[in-house]
Image (cartoon, rainbow, N blue to C red; front, side, top):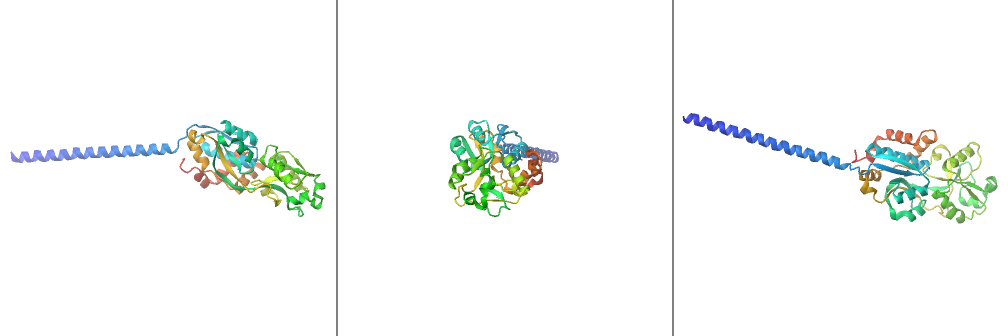
Length: 315
């Protein structure tokens, strides 16, 4: 009888042990599931897209256009629907100020776009630096050995004025560089006999290429980054009076509220930067016939490490 009781007690203890172990495993599984669920939620929280329809502004200068399409493709990689709106510089800033444009990656500050920033800054936000130390200036082919400074234009060195009929080939009238030419450079050097001819970025580049192919003189408004520095042997004239100002940085700029409305997009744009040389490579692809978006895609394909860096924490 006592033997049977011992056996029953032993069985009861074993049964209780099994039940407690099962409960423990169940609790552990529940904790693991909860932890996994929390981890999944945290991963989802990393990519808070917010408003997914974005308007990305750009002007019609290829240096800004290729970078804008690069930003577009990156934003689309993380889930946004992006439309690129290409306008002149002034409309680009008014679009940011009135909220019809969300962000640009081609703000030239503190000098070239200074007038636009001063007018609309209350409705804008600087995000980050896209490219450091971009330069504006007047440029000539390197074979114009006697013309090395803007002062040579004033002094009519080697009869350069007569050779060019006193014309400097410019770009579109709304460009910040044209404003600087009219307000600072031409009066600063007393270029009273010279006229600044309005055209466009493409027309200026074509005129420069034609002149170089024929080894003729030409003076153009130019800047870095620009594909012509990859293609031709050209030089920027010295500016001893610093009328063009110190080098600009290219900045990303958004409308106010963009960070709150589309936080993942804001984070990606804040991590986006590119060198002048890499921008010029894409520009040259466009000059040789490639669509700007295709040039941007080719650059992404060739630089997966950079893409990973730009999208850190977002994929």
